Figure 1 (cartoon, rainbow, N blue to C red):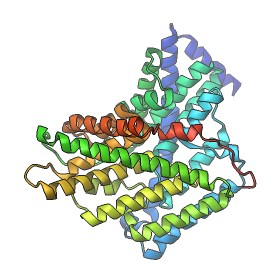
Figure 2: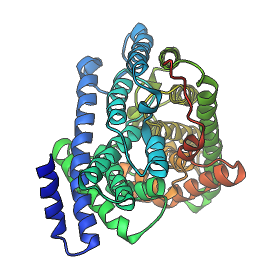
Figure 3: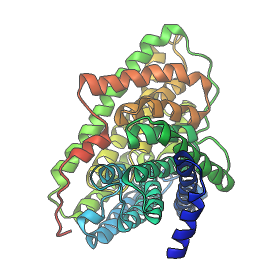
Figure 4: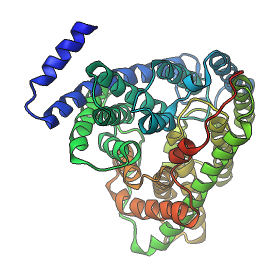
Length: 437
């Protein structure tokens, strides 16, 4: 261990400037984070493909009704049993935990939290809970940066940069969105733009993207149809869509925070078991809510979901995600916000097309707009949301209407309803938990 540390320090010492050293460290962090995320994704996909119908890792809908209920319940029980034996401060996970460690603990991310995040998120996603892999990926990637910083005994400021490098690398490796990953790391993790940090973050993101391409290929996450440029006459409709999504993001944040607050007195085992039972029951009403739900997003792009089904998916996905995460499931919330936003946007677009059939664009376009608006308003990261929907869909015509909807939704949430980023809200909350576990 000591010899490897010495060799790494000698290698970095040859760099002729502080920026070059940070870039080299960003490169190393990008490699470490990409390896972790590739392993994380591989385990999840292989596990899902091994038992879901047609070997489709998204196909929870075709499971027998009893498995739709029992699978999330079993996942909740299993995670609850594991977390029962982990001290409360050692089972903190996700982006809020990463921000808390950066703010109050010099960016040191403990190994046991890393392991709790990895194992807990794999179980959550495989067992069909309504969570995403983005939050866990950011935590795992940031922990990779923390490990590199530990090896090199770096200062707090350098450690913060490497955590952001790891977070960007993780997002890039997980979703094939290298540019959005950089902006996400700057907007959400660093909370500032600085020249010295941007370059190593970019290098980490590019490195992780190339490694991910070598393993998973270079396809966009969503198969989006080609859309024409949106007409200027629809600007009012886009603004209305943005306002609705902004209100929805506030409901999402407040439901999650309220559930977290009301359930914190319960032992962790019963919280997670309850999360599994509730997810299973909601899944019986709308099986499309199970899992991350990216197949549902693609279906909204192609107008394949009926109006009543869109409404039920929207309500039950919102409840399953906010209740599950509020009760303590170690999953991510960015993926579900994309699904909720896409479904809500498609719902708005479908209603508009029914009212104004000659002058309304395809509901699929509104689904893409809604996806970005929900992410941007919930996270208060508008630029990261815009770049994410562009890189996830590779649709150039989404930029202008997407930006309008994202700005309107973000302002509706933050300025009119005083709702900050969900991660900031979670970090500011008292974190005292029962230790009876």
